[in-house]
Image (cartoon, rainbow, N blue to C red):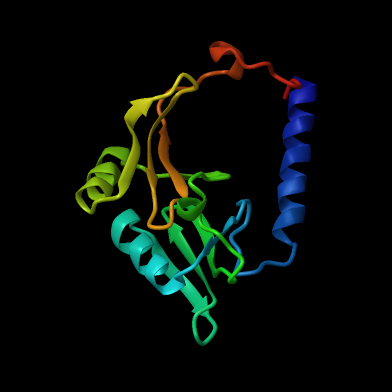
Length: 165
């Protein structure tokens, strides 16, 4: 019992210390902020808002060279690509997949489908306990829209746990 109390006190002290750290309203805390490149950035910003429901937080440059968008608690930066850039659609394959957590996957899917997003996976529950669907955006970037469906340990579905938490 003493160990658990001490651990809770240490965790509270750590949270308090970080609360005093510098804050930056331009970058959300505790978030991986991916930067996604687009050949036609203004079209991408409009498409991501209209089809996937993102909200623009800010944009910069004239002409626009970057913007920050969010969907619920998921944040992304979108940037104008240089002439050497090839989109996943041009390459014929993607190199990454972005997962955004949304509360209502079914409604999000219905919206994206009705606006002709390229659906790559229909809504389904994964072996690791997520309910999700996959779609491509206008330049071929792969997106997963997901919510937690079940609480599973990685060992429950066959993954090897690297270290105990």
